[in-house]
Amino acid sequence: MQEMRRKDRQGTREDAERILRKETFGVLSTAAMEGYPYGVPINYYYEDGCIYIHAARNAGKKIAAMRKDPHVCFTVCTDVKLRAEAFTTRFQSVICFGTAAELEGEAKRKALQGMIRSLTPDFVEAGLAYVDKALDAVSVFCIHIDHMTAKIHD
Image 1 (cartoon, rainbow, N blue to C red):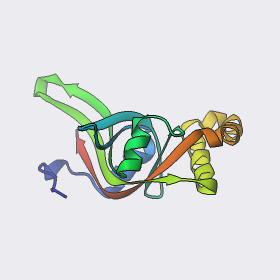
Image 2 (cartoon, helix red, strand yellow):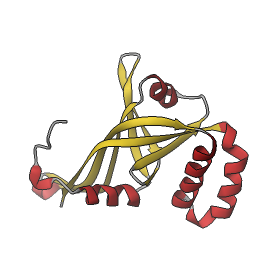
Image 3 (cartoon, rainbow, N blue to C red):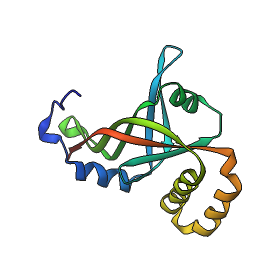
């Protein structure tokens, strides 16, 4: 991996994990489809070094792309504020490179339950019932992070 140019803005692994745990929305980028890379905004949750995402089962470009080539990049950016007077932008970001693995069975159910608890904490009971109802209609992937960097510019 190429090193970050602005080392003075490089965050720690703890910074990266803090950002991933705090946020719920990022951009998943997959390898070329029809000659183009593909980036799609998506909800996620992070736990134990993995980013979990879901989608309608057997539908859509992101599922097809990850099944074709599981190498992905996942980006989260937060606390963005344009500082026009200084010709710069304040932000915190994480870029993760990893491999997507499709989950099945109990691992899939557990990941969806984790998503419910993380993304909709005020609706856990209804969400867990929804997981049981929709389990066969969704695909769930775990992105195993091989390398990640945080960048913080205040």
